[in-house]
Image (spheres, one colour):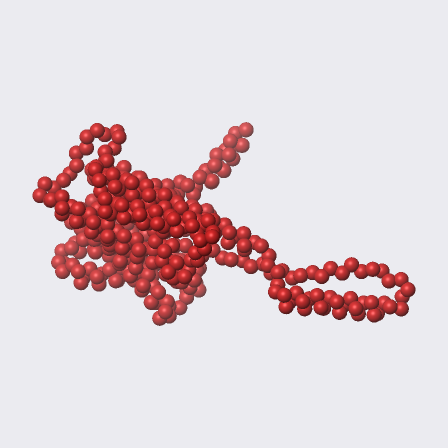
Amino acid sequence: MATEKLGGCAKFFECSKPYLAMISLQFGYAGMTIITKISLNQGMSHYVLVVYRHAFATIAIAPFAFIFERKGQPKIAFSIFMQIFILALLGPVIDQNFFYAGLKLTSPTFACAISNMLPAMTFVIAVFCRMEKINIKQVRSIAKIVGTLVTVGGAMLMTLYRGPIVEMVWIKQAHYKTNGTTSTGSLDRDWLLGCIFLIISTIAWASLFVLQAKAIQTYKNHQLTLTSLVCFMGTVQAIVVTYVVEHNPSVWKIGWDINLLTAAYSGVVSSSISYYVQGLVIKKKGPVFATSFSPLMMIISAIMGYFILAEKTYLGGVIGAILIVIGLYSVLWGKHKEQMENQVEAEIPLPVNDAESSVTEEQNMVDARDYFTEEKHDQKVEPINLKFSSIVITLSIQESPTR
């Protein structure tokens, strides 16, 4: 009896691993957003933060890539180098710099809510690149289109309308940290600019996902190597951008403080450990399962931001976030149905074409005629049951790799 209970507990824990892993990742992402906001508020340059973050990420990932993937490395031709260069430009440079700039002007909750637009933006860019097909007669296509429109509408609502402050139900009065010298008009302009930065960041992130599919075909068995190269190239590009934008050498100084913690935490946890854990979950449960946990990060950030940063929550942000989450799950549902249909099509055997089928039948008829010719001297001829078999070919459709 005790053995059965232990076996049941072990089975339950094994089935719960993907859920626990993704929930833990959302706490890690939310924590990264909070400490990054604190670091930026204390004056750290987001350009320098991008450099240090991806330097830590390169140091954390490169040894594992060298140990486990040093055999059979693809040769870095000029075309492959340009793919890595563009991926680094879209990810570490454009995406991260605009995200941190938008986070500094808005709030962690708002930044996490805008990040939920990623599946919808990826779908739009994939359609323009002819990597996604739209058929308005299919329910899954309609779900992805409607989900994209709802997501964009929620983002526009969060950008253009703030509304009154929404207080938490368990706290009647909240003491917010405000700067008395800052006017409401200035805050509104900063908020709008931060929204635009976050949207640009999401578009760059979605473009990275679309273009990464080509690079993953080359580094199919060396994804750690690809990540290391992108992080290293992104570090080099971020250094150049920082030297061009930041003319004060003191911005590079970093001590044993929140700035160092932010850079190390972002690089090791958000860019290294999360990559490995999320890869394992995607391999076991699929990309839709992994992506469906992203709204949890927004909720965790809202709670942590309220207590740690005394973050203000506005009605427009709440309504917009709800619309974005609804649109997110609509797009994910459509994508899930598409993956299921592709799996079914991959398992259905397809007959050969008419030319091959006619050749097979003609050969069978010739064989039957020869048989009767050879046996015509016999008085009794046993009837022969001829079965014209057709050759089938099973096509296996591989699922596109995910970051």
